[in-house]
Structure formats: C-alpha cells, structure tokens
Image (cartoon, rainbow, N blue to C red):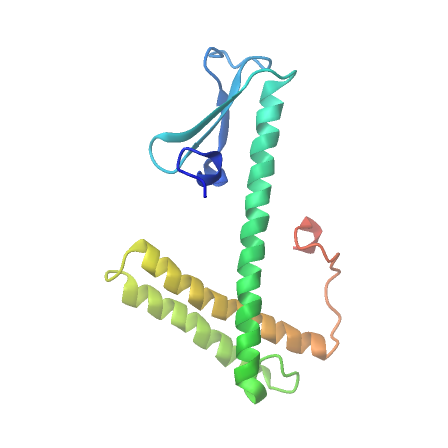
Length: 176
C-alpha cells in the first residue's frame, strides 16, 4: 500500500507540470517537474531532466496517469452499478424498469424516487456527519440511481429501438 510520500498516494488529478529547479525561464530543454498535492503543500515532486524533451516527457506522464485514474474510477463505478443492478433485478421482478412492457411513468417514478433519496441524504447528513460518511451514503444512493437508469435502458433495448452508433469502447469520445 502506498505511503503519502509515494506517487500512488497523491491523486493524479492534482498533478501539474511546472518548470523544475534552475529552470526559472521555463526553457523547453531545461528541467521540468511533476508536482502534486492533496492539501496546501506539494506531497509529490518528481524532476524530469535527463531527456531530450523533458517538458514533453513530464506532460506525457501526467496525461497517462490522469487517463489511467479516470478509467480505473469509471470501471470501479460501473462495477458497483452492475452489482446493484443484479441485486435489484433479483428483487424487483415485475416492477423492474428493464421490463419492456412496464409503462414509462412507473419507470420514471422509480428513477425519481432514487433521485429523491440522494436529496434526502444530502439534507439529512449535511450537518450530522463528516465528509467521508456523507460520501459513502451519496455513493450508495447514486449507484442506485445509475442502476435504475441502466435497467430502464435495458428495457428500451429489449424493445429493439434503434440507438445511437456506439463503438463499444466506453472511453471513445464519439460515444458521448
């Protein structure tokens, strides 16, 4: 498990490329650094200097780490949605929004109910719990919202309604 001083423990969303020590005029071939912070002070400082184009190398590292982090978070969130979807599918049966014969108003009611639970969680926990506890509850409720929306989408697919062109790659920008 990474310690706070290791690169893996500093959120890559905070990583930035900056001129390194001794490169005050930001020369392209000078030393460049990757910095990252979870607070006011930098918890990460990595210099790139022994490269033909140190700035480009540093930018590549930051972009690669940011992309990897986004994909990992997306995959984790989608796995949670799938688990919730399968759990609900076993429970709901006739009122499952994936049922293509269920009227849309019932599906909408199910989705709005889940969204309302998010609002109730925000209202209830706003002053009573810390950030971590609130995030945990919100994550659970948002997973339920997403699982309900996915179920509805499954119902639409079951009716074989033409959908947008999808390449199958969840990270392909053309699919948005």
